[in-house]
Length: 294
Image 1 (cartoon, helix red, strand yellow):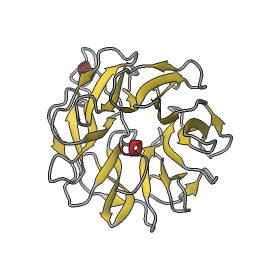
Image 2 (tube, rainbow, N blue to C red):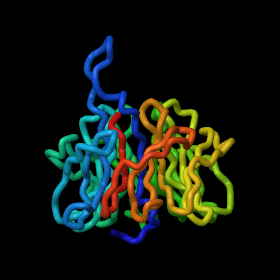
Image 3 (cartoon, rainbow, N blue to C red):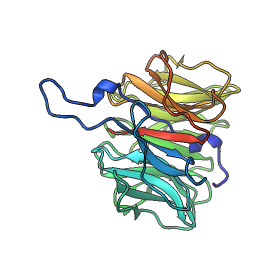
Image 4 (tube, rainbow, N blue to C red):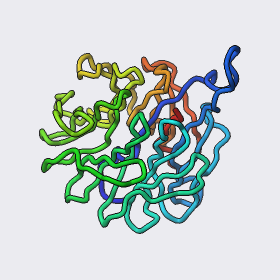
């Protein structure tokens, strides 16, 4: 992997309750509850997998000698974007949700990372060091029309769309240490949301757009949640290990995260208030970057 802050490998996502799959008493059968994630459990390279919301029924979607990271579902659940070293440097790809028909979306000598689909499925935001430092870009979902959204001497990482598609949250060290910012989806009007002496990173919008979850590093990393304007931050996790890059379930009731609390990185889920933390994966490999299918 390229040299970068360790949390950029660990983008975490939300999980619904088990009741989210199956048949509604008055409606049609719902899509099975799936979580996409990355793991090096097979052969040492990092591949993209899916599992059910209890951590079972694990399926390997990618299987090659390169590393594939950070799965991101399209809004309709039909595609998964990810970044991969399969063509020598890190580029962004998209594939069908079953792992078939992977297509390379970016193509340049720099690295492109951390894809995030817009809520309407038409755009993909990502960060790239193609101009020397890390900046946020957006492109059409087929890889055409890349546009740079941020432009400063600092590093900008980890774009996250607001549910209405009007805003993008991200992290930046433009004011010295890493803080959470938000800007319009065209890159205009960036506003700093957090302001403290430690690093804040990995923003994730709640489905109703009212909250943002993120990680804070006052020593080890912990998960916090704040209002979307940056007010009223609340700590959700509290242990001696690192808890990274939270993300919300589609119904806003749960949050998934990646944690080192049991000696290696595993995927956990908790209620949105931090209660009832449950381990979903359990093996000697690195399990990370979970993403809940919309």
